[in-house]
Length: 223
Image (cartoon, rainbow, N blue to C red; front, side, top):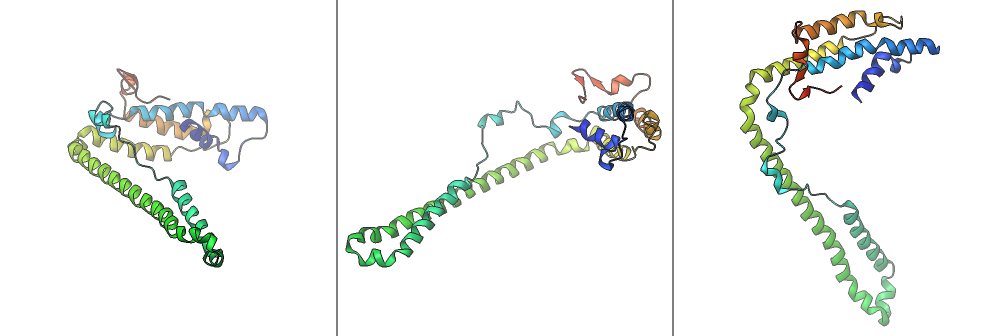
């Protein structure tokens, strides 16, 4: 998906300046191949950071609790209020009939109990579920704060500072990438190509460029 958005920007589709003829369109598509490869290489040069700083440990026994975030069932809540509203409307509309006809006195006497049941059921469901959600949110926030305090020292690690500087430098470099001509070949990004090559040289060893893009497990970032 990231490659798709990058291709859209490089082709200039949002500016609607694609050529009319098919041959030129094909050349336009081919003109972004080299610059796209350079852009895909850049994220793979990011310095390594402590693995447990940004990603939770999947082997942590804490996950054995299988805590599920409580979900508020709005259909059940509004359904209960709808039953209560329909019952109250029926009782109000037929109040004279229910209280003047002795044969319907059981309905008149039963309305308060049914009304209290439907209304209290929806109210208690709302209060109890919201309390569970708030308690769970409080637990998550407390646990997140504990993990932050536990791993706070790693934020001062030199590799983390290098990674933060790399992200800022990458964002600034990609913002300078632009199409400077419409020759429908690689020369359309002549200056941008030099900018990206300079960025790659800053974060890799020209004598061994693969060392900055690969680790023992494989690619740092899959293209």
